[in-house]
Length: 245
Image (cartoon, rainbow, N blue to C red):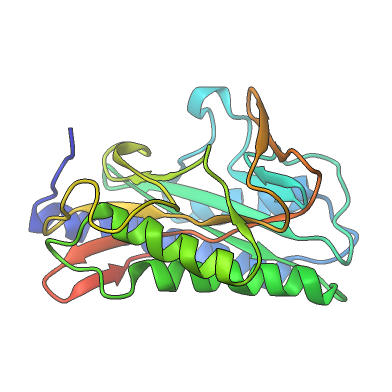
């Protein structure tokens, strides 16, 4: 069942979404070659808890950290570890915060130092896919319009869209209905209503769209890199409002 928030609940959601925004800005500033993904996770954990919030991911289904940090062929759900961050890697950081009884959720694909033009294009196009996905979206739009617009932009640029991982509703629960695919047909799916809050998160691959999933592990089947860009958004009177930017 899709949970439509009240105006008061929307106001409560703004704080955790702002914390997520600020944490992603912080890790973007702090990421360095030579640091471990565990060190980057601690920066996020310390900031979230300093705000009086809880990391949404920590303990979720047994997940062991405050952030998902996924490198190159890792699509999502990478465990922070002693792995060293190096130049020419795509480092995707996904983070959630719980505050006021609500969650915020967003992700960015980052890099440090030199990166190949091909990987830089993948990161840029993945971000563009998000903004193409919300273009023209408003109350009454079909959910499938978002995925269709994401898919069209990705494939126009020679990339593919992951099918096995999708966006989702977000609010009192980290994952709520509806599922929000990053592919599909215009005019299909539920109609968007005022005060729906959803996490739209294109996951775009340089190679084929197939992924291998084993527990938390999710990697591209062909070993080619993937990028991720996500925001929590509100469907409102003026279209889409991005709560985590």
